[in-house]
Structures are given as structure tokens and as C-alpha cells.
Image 1: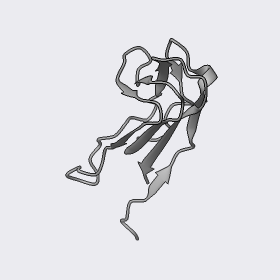
Image 2 (image 1 turned 90 degrees about the horizontal axis):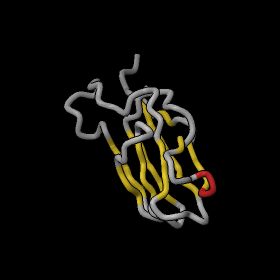
Image 3 (image 1 turned 30 degrees about the horizontal axis):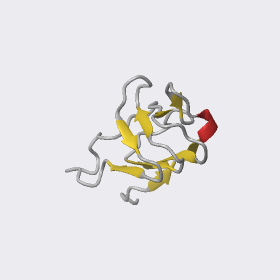
Image 4 (image 1 turned 180 degrees about the vertical axis):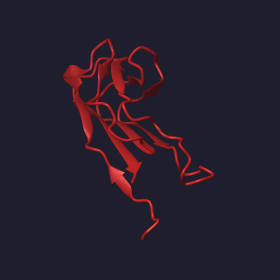
Amino acid sequence: MSTTRQMRFEELRDLGFASIVADYTAIGDALDHPAVIITIENFTDALLLFSVDGTTDHFVVPSGGFKLYDIKTNARSSDSGFSLATGTIIYVKRSGIPTSGSVYITTIYNK
């Protein structure tokens, strides 16, 4: 019996520039698993704001930029419960007005 934890990817979530408006819009569906690594990439030509509750500005990603949250790397225990919770939806709204590109969310969980 192997005790190795395995890295698994959820399906890529994306949203094109034309769907990024002044109010928060969900980027795909809610997380199916608790994410331990998450990457948000902004391949639009505008500064974008992101939220995990759909109302509060939580972080910003500039045009051509990304955010990487590696939640488990420095955890004291491989079984610690620290993660981005199942059911979380990541939302985006514009700060500038994008005219091209898309935003992408990659999530990784332990199995």
C-alpha cells in the first residue's frame, strides 16, 4: 500500500475578455476538490480584480501577469487541512477594459 499523496488537476477554468465586465463574473464552476495549489493567469490586455466571494476585491492581476498560491508547500503536516475549500468559486471583474485575451484558473489538489 502506497502512502504517497498524488497531485491531481481539476479541469482548466477560463473566461474570455468579452465576458469580463464591471461586476464580478464567475470563472467556471465551483471547485470540486480542496485546492492546494492555484494559479490565476491574466492573458487579457487589462488589469483585473479577483474575488472568492463575488463581492469583495481580494487580489489584482495585471495584464500578462499571474498569481500563484502554493498553499501546502510549507505546511507542517502533509495532512493539514489548509486549502482553498471545495465549492469555492473564483470571480473576476475589470479594472481596465479588456479588448483581447482570456483569464485562466488552474487548480491542483491532493489525492
